[in-house]
Amino acid sequence: MRNTVEIDTLMNAVRYAAQNSPFYQKIYSEKNVDMDRLQTFEDFEELPFSDKHELRDAYPLGLQAVPDDEVIRIHSSSGTTGNPVIIPYTREDVENWAIMFARCYELAGITKLDRVQITPGYGLWTAGIGFQAGCERLGAMAIPIGPGNTEKQLQMMIDLQSTVLCATSSYALLIAEEVQKRGLRDKINLKRGVIGSERWGDLMRQRITDELQIELFDIYGLTEMYGPGIGIDCEKHEGIHYWNDFFYFEIIDPVTGEVLPEGETGELVITSLKKAAAPLIRYRTHDLTRIIPHPCSCGREYPMIDRIIGRTDDMIKVKGVNIYPGQIEDTLKCVDGLSSEYQVVIEHMDGKDNMTLRVETRREADKIKVSEEIQLIFKQKVGIRIQCECLNLGDLPRSEKKSKRVFDYRDK
Image (tube, rainbow, N blue to C red):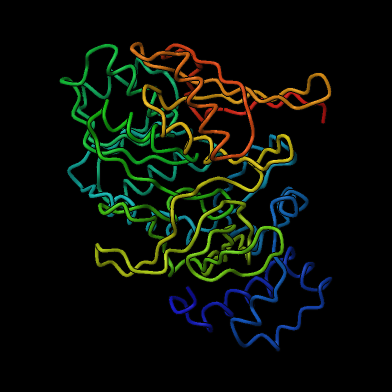
């Protein structure tokens, strides 16, 4: 949404990166970018993208754009597929992140009277400390338990009468199932859940809502851009508001890189407007969404993106068809008697790919009919025939962090 950011603000962010970041000095030098010719949004859209693999190549501190004595903290990505991405922060960066996170809490209706139970991890990962800093900025009570130890989580939830649960959707589901299983609903005082770190479908959303009897808010963020807290949905749940005084959002065609019109779905690209220690210009997130072209009915001026429907690198190709997790979840929500949990197993046997979708069915469901219905709807919606295996509720593993749902055993 170009009209939400002044061109001078955007160009100042680009020039800051070009003058202070060795990372962007190298990129712009290699691409022969002439800073003096940058005047319009069209000029900005000619700038090269930056991507995670380039950030990994800058390991450990090649992204740093300020002197060492201005860096007060670092965070990093997991590094599971290569070098981790190290992101340095100045004091101002940390303060800005807390400001944004406090806004997220406020949009979710959280006040100083709330007691916020924080279950995401602390340390190099950005999640836990971001949730805590925003909570303290707001003035609410932070209960920084961190991940795991479900017994302790439930004890604190009861004894301290936590009103807000901050978690991944996978762990929120695990907590919800344990509350239901142990008959604790009348002993807890949860009102809201702030859920992030992984995409989650309508079935999971509904299960958590029903079993905990809370209102859920979808928080968005990524390590490279401070961390979680750069956007959240409000009480109207019409989209995710993002902070356009801190970021400029674009949606591009993930194949061609062409900027798409507002309302069209594509890959989200973010430019930081105020990051000092590690500015990022036209950073490809690989998250798939769209910019919602109309304001929210809540009346707030912050623009919105739609829920993240998947990632370009989450796509799997089976029998020549591109499949995203969101398509699988859209299939499952059409079938009665299912839980939110599923697994995809892909194997190459007898010269061809085979995909098995494992789902959990409720006790009263007819597994044979459910399996046949899923196979039929999947063929209609996605375009390929699959096998379906129906399991009992709770048979698939639960996670205290993020759930792994796709297991591809084909020879790479």
